Length: 386
Image (cartoon, one colour):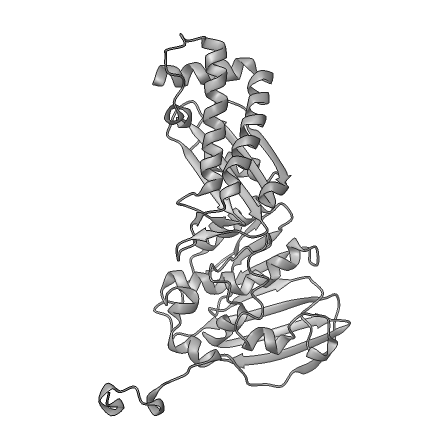
């Protein structure tokens, strides 16, 4: 075959690496150059700081939408190492901000939050920002460095003594890359609120200083975990609760992970079940959600047969009947999650289904027995509804 005609001669093959590759194909790294990609820039920048809190190395994360269009992400952790020679197993500042995936975390374990979904690290944020500044307070010294489109433009500078410790990254998205550089406060708040519900240790604030007057600010910290999440989902619609919240969490070595569940029935309305795996939303469900539904259906059917005593030939309470008015949050955290499809929105770990079903059945069985009035009211309403 004639290479000149096919166009595949070696001299014409392009190999893009690092910053050049990110700027050439930004959608491969953050999903899009629209609002979705812009939002993920914030999540990728915040990912490292959030992990510091969950690991117990920091107390909180503060994110600020600046009046000049920048985004400031600050934590009070020990500060990113500024020189690789420190040899403590972490990427130093320059590596973190210029090498892809250097700050993306272990990728796969229970701490894999994947805030930005692609988990590519802050180097991608740097590459797609017209400007980024880094400030590190570590071991009594304040260090500073500035970058432009992924490349350092100032030396690492000792800016004097520091009080406390921490890392501050401030970035300005590149208007040449993004169709819009206007962040949605509400969209960012939704995801950070969700993360706080799913991770009790997390303490994170979001502040908007872009408008006139007093800045808008929200803090997200939910010691109640999934139980708080269920209350939030119901309260948004002001739906009256028909039962107390059933909540539990525990570890199961058979699935190499933990499960946390909270659920309650409302007096009316459709089901509202939200599922997560390693803090990722799984809108298409998976084995954890299937196991949850198995457990709820089995517990309610057993209780209905015991209380209503139908004839042996009569069908029991069907799985579909159990969901009417149900609000629930199902969260599993696994050592080795297996997701189906490129969008990673379906969990596939086989062992999870039976483990979650067993746990839900056991705890819901106990709750039904301990709360006979609420249990009877729910079961009879579901049967009548059928």
